[in-house]
Image 1 (cartoon, rainbow, N blue to C red):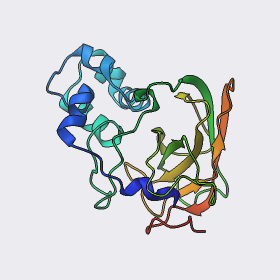
Image 2 (image 1 turned 135 degrees about the vertical axis):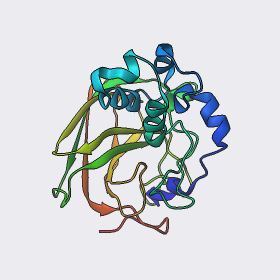
Image 3 (image 1 turned 60 degrees about the horizontal axis):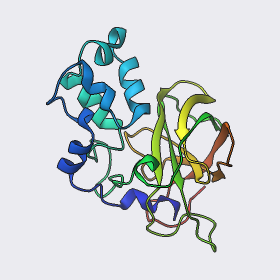
Length: 216
């Protein structure tokens, strides 16, 4: 049930690209990177280029391609993501009026340790939970979503990231550019008001392929 947001439509690709200029290199230049909507992926994109070229020299086609592959604010799915697995358009809580954003020291652990390293860590946050299952309501896309780190060699992973107090978050670990069935996931943890830290633990539960309950 938690994974049902994976089957939601990503919306019109042209609309998404228009909302986030960093998804395309059409407006190449130094100033483009400052308009990126997904700040986490922007940081990773800058770190993956020599001397931070994407954020200091110019936003080239290579920069945009890397950013668009991972950013939730760009069109999806990309290679390796199954049909119908595009992330929903509602990828950032900051797009919703009335939701605050606070900077949080996020720690993500995996227990038991993954058999294979080099994967990607994601988070998803939900405003409401199903009173019966304790998970997100069926068909409900996440209120907040983002990538914490890519090509992770060891855990725990730590990052300074903006999240929304009151939302219920869980982490995911997989090898696609977006979360997909079979990825490992963790239990929901609520970010309390006034909290400056959040710890997410990814267990051996996996995202189901049928939109049902998580599997061990």
